[in-house]
Image 1 (cartoon, rainbow, N blue to C red):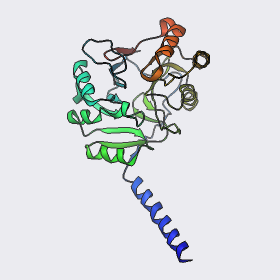
Image 2: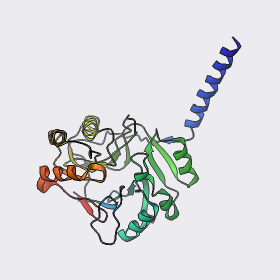
Image 3: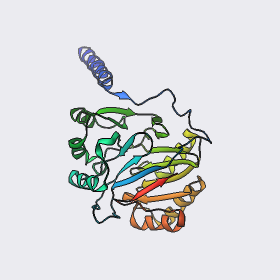
Image 4: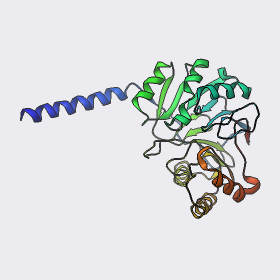
Length: 281
């Protein structure tokens, strides 16, 4: 009986600790939610996406390395999505990009892998005091590190607005928790992925359903490097059946798989690579 009492007391203490610990961090939420997304809603001007870190490079001044990072501009706020792998390469590539790091308003992480978070230590030497948006299932150590760096953690569970016309997909419940970014345009949704570990098609289907709007464009890492030609044919067909018109595959997608996307989408395929710029109208 004494052992059972001690066990019950320990369980209560642990539960209370978890609840109190969770209260240290705010969740990203807003009154509007997804209510502003409709068939006629979307950006009124061009949005520019600059690739800072990628497995490939389109500039002799920017290094290619396994990892991913982009900056999104034209929404009233500038968003940094992931920070690549090596701090020194992130630092060098960002400086060579010609962008002003003081203008970054929000940092977003897709998932807790080093090839997306590794450049953080370099970033905070140049900029702190801003919110960081990431899936709520990230480790306690990562959350604590953000606060030590002078950043403000904002946890993500469900889809929510980050800034006008830009949303988080919400956390995908998978062995590797991950979120994507969703830009609302009048042509449809533009989805940006870090690695798409939960499955690119599964993610797109869920986002199309939750946002109740067609997907126009998707780009980023798709994590398909082990997929066979037959599996790729099915994935590409599914992507097109979801209404995707434009596609850009990079990072962990796989070289053979990237080539297949290029061939399948033709003129509607676009390259990424460090130094490249994507204009979304």
